[in-house]
Length: 249
Figure 1 (cartoon, one colour):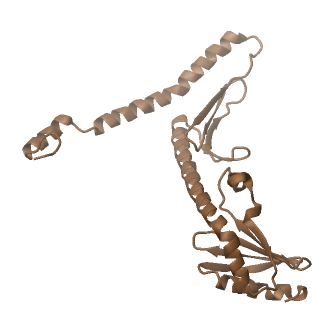
Figure 2 (figure 1 turned 180 degrees about the horizontal axis):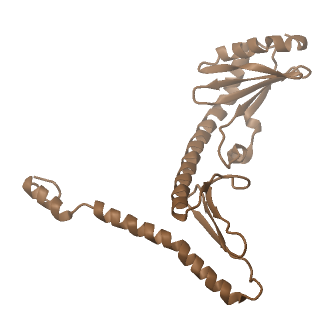
Figure 3 (figure 1 turned 90 degrees about the horizontal axis):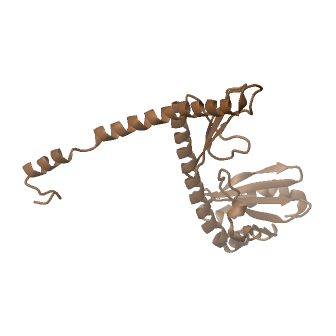
C-alpha cells in the first residue's frame, strides 16, 4: 500500500481487519476530501471509528460511545481520559496484526466502559420516559400541553402556561431524576392596584391551580379504597378452605 492507492484499498483494509475480529462487522468506508473513514460494530452496539488521511498515512482507531441525553460520555469516563480509547497504526502492517493490536490495546479498556455507558443510557432513557408520562398526566390536570425538552432544557418535560398581560403564569418542569420544579410568575404591581391586590390575586390563582390536584388526589384515593381487599371477606374465604389467617392448613 502507498498514499496514492489509499481510497481504492480502504474497503479491503477495513473488511480484512474485521475478518480477524470475531463478532465485529464493517460499515463500508466513505470518502471526504483527502480522507476516508469506516466503522467496525458488534452486536452490542459498540463501535470503532477507523480513519485515514492520505498525507498522514496512519490508520487512526477510536472508540465511540452511546448517546446519553443530557450527558457527555467524556465527562463520565474515569479521569475524563479519552486518550486511552484511541490509537494509531501503520496501514502497511498485515490486517491480522492490526486486528490483534486493536484487540489488545482497546478492547480491555473500552468494552467494560461501553457496557457501563450502555446501562447508563438505558437508565436515563427510562427516567426520560417516566418524566414524560408524569408531565402528560399533569398536563391533563392543568389543561395545558406537555412540551418536549428544548433549548437549555436538555432533559425532562414541561408544562407551561403564559396568560399574558397582568395575569400570572406558571411553569412546571418534570426532571428525569424524580423531582418536579414548579414556578408561578406574577407581574409587578400595575399602576393603581397596590401590592395587596397582587397578593390576593396570586392567592386566588394558586387556589384555583391547586384545586384540580386536590380533586385528582381525592379521586385516586377513592379508587384505591374501592380496589382495596376486604379483610373480612378474605378471612371468610380462608376459613371455608380450612386455612388459617396465613393460608396454612
